[in-house]
Image (cartoon, rainbow, N blue to C red):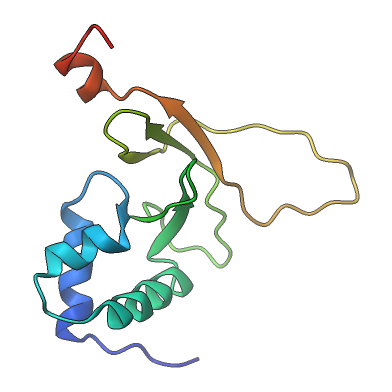
Length: 132
């Protein structure tokens, strides 16, 4: 196993995730790093953080990939088995830790990861414009 270095860029990206309550796209992360590193370095850091189970990927309805910090205790094998909410108005994606998706699989399948996304309007959009 390769040991991950704590670079200035990695530390900055981890701080960005620590402060964000929603999932972030690569472009949003790059904007917040304010030129600290190039886009390829950000992709490499994101891939490493996904592999290290620090963040997870979420595919939006339109195919956009966003990343969110994992909120779990480190276990030997972790499945991201929580739901996500995608707001159709502001396009923010939020992890819903208390909403557990359920499914019934045939006996000859083994689930390794769940990507369960609900879409609609988030509380911020509903409160700012109740006529939506």
